[in-house]
Image (cartoon, rainbow, N blue to C red):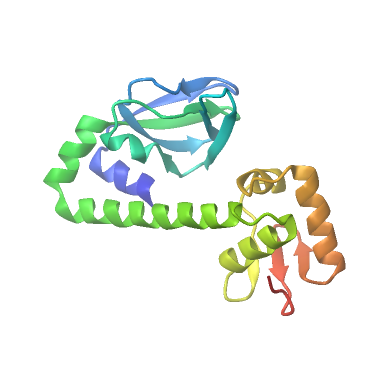
Length: 198
């Protein structure tokens, strides 16, 4: 994971505590750090020129965020704590120096970033699907393990948000999919039935 690699590259990074609703940074602030979330939730939101906001990502414990700012002067979104949170702060100039010093860890870092790009492309693919039913089924097809089961990470409300669906719509579609026997739900997981197809 990127957080583990960052910890090896910069073992003495400082931490910061945030209360729920507190900003870590605002869109346009100088980008001095790359962050890893130790616990809690950080929500990244971008504001457009027309004043509308676009949710970008909800970081969970163990995840890194703002890697795109490594070669940017400013942050291009807001970061606010969705719950009481603690982040590790990796100074960009220290990170770049550490990557130059340790080529093997630098390669691992690049590989992790590559996987993050793949995750974002999947995110874009899912959000291009207009039907909530088809979006949910496609997500489950992409994320389920070999046993056709997806282990839910976080809450169903968080999952709905990550899929760009209102949680009421998400719950309603899950109930319909279960009624149609396309999925089977149990505590902490959703299993795709063999007949599931988009």
